[in-house]
Length: 279
Image 1 (cartoon, helix red, strand yellow):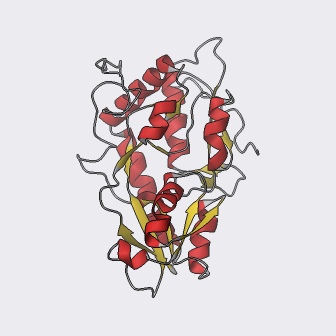
Image 2 (tube, helix red, strand yellow):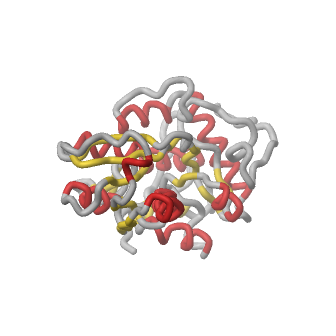
């Protein structure tokens, strides 16, 4: 694992809290190949929506933060091993994951979307995928979708350690389509003329939340309170517009406050009403 960000000292500034005395830095991790959420910058670190989001979360908590970079497939095992306090990587909240982890409510929606090579006929339905090779980032719900539907649709799974490699497989003709999150597919298409954002799988809208270990309920609630305040004052929406290119509407998770703590109707949900101090 390569640490791309040293411990970032979040200074006390006007309108910001003083550093919490005696508390260790918050520790989290991202997949640094998942543009525009987290990806390399020219100075040798990482940048993106997730980096800006959780630096601001830490600043408002008065804490330092250390953000590591690793392959997504290893992040949840590392979290469970105690290496991190939570994951800064965007993590799709599935029922299976929520049975093993605690999540904040979603701060952005994710939907499963396919990217194809320019010139390929648009995908209209699952039948257009039959017999095709689909590239994915390893260890993600996108890989799981291909696995679950492999026999039914005669799919070939091509799993890569990075989303960039998965998208490149489509451009090179090794895969018919790349399956990933909608924000990532749209961003890849905006940067690569040969790559086109195509069909969104119906009924796949899910929370992208922040995972914690099951014994970290207090910290989960504290981080969610901060995220709620950042929704109320428009910070999450502004970061979304900066990195994804369009302002989220009132029905988007960047602006929506959900009752209680965690995604409603998922394991680990705490119905205690939120009452964050956003002053």
